[in-house]
Amino acid sequence: MTDQTPPVDEMDYETMTHEALRTVIRDGLLRAASPAGLPGAHHFYITFKTRAADVSVPPDILAKYPDEMTVVIQHWFENLTVTHEGFAIALNFGNSPGTMVILFDAMRTFVDPSVEFGLRFETQDSEDEAEEAPEVPEAAPAEAPLPSGGAEVVSLDKWRK
Image 1 (cartoon, rainbow, N blue to C red):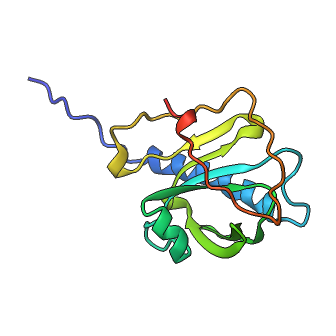
Image 2: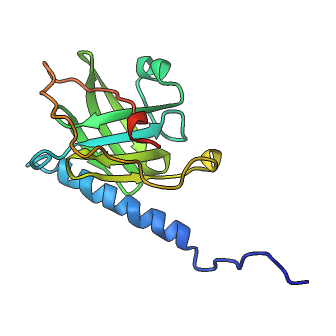
């Protein structure tokens, strides 16, 4: 009988790939944090685990989204600070500003619908889900600026298979 055990990946390509993809997100956020801000129609939908280690969400938002949530970074955001581990950002939820700290390890999806770009990160508790980036609609609807600034929490379910 032959051993059917898959070979050990001593190079750890999965970890290297995840780190490379996180660098893409980090670089996009760094561009958004620059004085010029987001160029053109670019905007980001970021879904993350709200209770992941070292993630910080205002208590009232955490009560509404106890497991995961999606934020849109587009028209109004302040104090976007990007590090190697994640980012901090001030958003306005219903005229109630709050600062969030989101680590890259807590991210589930990152989508920029303006260019149909999306990444999906699998976690150990979601191994049964499809292992592909979320579908992005052919033409993302144009969004009007939110009055008085305001963050929008949206569901990405329509882009999931």
